[in-house]
Image 1 (tube, rainbow, N blue to C red):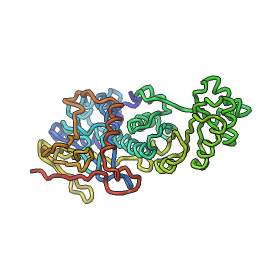
Image 2 (image 1 turned 90 degrees about the horizontal axis):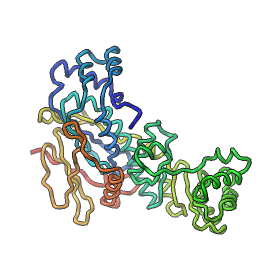
Image 3 (image 1 turned 30 degrees about the vertical axis):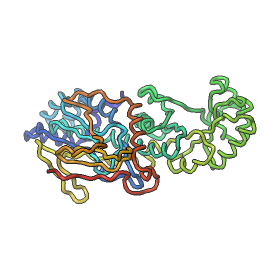
Image 4 (image 1 turned 180 degrees about the vertical axis):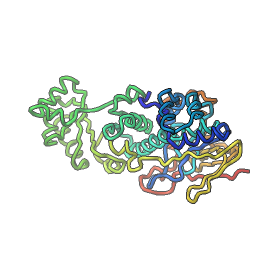
Length: 428
């Protein structure tokens, strides 16, 4: 579990509303809040739902301990009535939404939190912090997986993120199709395969490159990866094969014109008899850099900064809005921020071949389903109790199948319309 207690992910204004609602008697009114995005980040054609598995655990464990309640009371954030309510807080409502690994588009109701007003509104920051971060990373990672065209990707971005965000980012990247992470906490917590290589510091520690390589091979065997660009890359490759022999598993290159260097390195490796030695490249790779290397003899990519920061879109732009009170649709009418009232149900419509053609959203109703429609929402928490969720590997496969289902234009890295159009059917 995270070292950060989930109750600490509560915003001041949420508790202001709780205090006022408890005082005026509206705290228990039955409400529904929805999470959705008004638009996708620039240049994106789909979003990826990620973080749901983490979120369900965090909601289950959402508590305010005595010290936290005392802090909130002493600093005037809440009054005595609200403090007493927080001390006994347990979420008793329902959470439904799109499966983890599902694609989403503008307006998709990816999560619905329903219950008493106070117990739902206090979760807003927690819900959005998890889903906005993880979904942003997963969308960027999915684009990199598409650009890699089946080649292996390693997530290596821990040093570019907050320590807990790094673990969450590794999970989201694995969900999206990365095969490994260098983050050992993510490996332990989520069972993600881990991989990594020595850094330049290890080579610089030794008197010469061969000595460094020999030490690594003596410790790890030939089934390891040697970093060959500390000094001269060509000589580094010669040294690596001289020390480890042609059975060396892989070399890594972290700098330079990777397209040119990859070609030259492959030729050199082959000339040295290391025809099975793989080439791993890293160094500020994003989906565009990976796509540019598609024709080069690269076997594996290491992505760091770009993936953990959403590759230019560090948030998914998700919002958490009240859409229903006591069964009555409520609507925000602010210019450019209007909402569609009522709890919604969504289906993804497909051709008989399996290609997605449309997403249909029906407020306060059940859509008229056709033979190849797929209902998108499912239950995550019922009456405060989590249901059994798919495993991370099952969610990873779900996303893979979703990406196969969208029209090929939707996988382009260039900007354009959402991969699947969304139609909202007015409530009857």
